[in-house]
Length: 165
Image 1 (cartoon, rainbow, N blue to C red):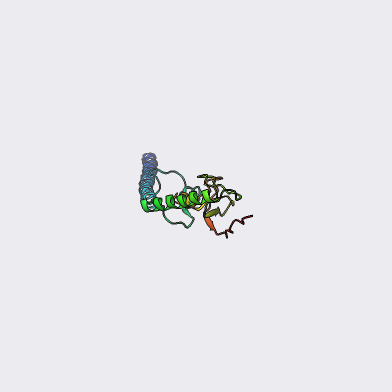
Image 2: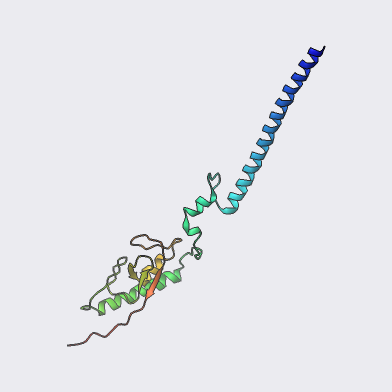
């Protein structure tokens, strides 16, 4: 009887260990499911794609513009497009008047001697102001020539009259 009692205790301990293991597995499954649900909610709040794998910080670090202060992308209105077109027309008229003067040509629209110029801050490339302004409407401002990040600054120059000889 003592032997059968020991066998029963041993069987009970084995069964208890098995139930404990199953209970722990069930708890882990529930925790994982909760974690998955919470993760999907957080991803949605952060604007990350559904089912994104990896660290959310990597997602934004790889897209460094997310940490840069910048205005939200804007859509160019007809008014803005007209203004840019108008500025280009003024540049074209000035172009015709300035024949014979050392010319600067915009590398984007090829206007010679634009009235207003712009320089890109990181690399120093220059273009006419209307092209720079039009290019600035992209969500991530970059130089159109070398693609370095950065915005542009307007250049102000004094124009002297051509000396008649």
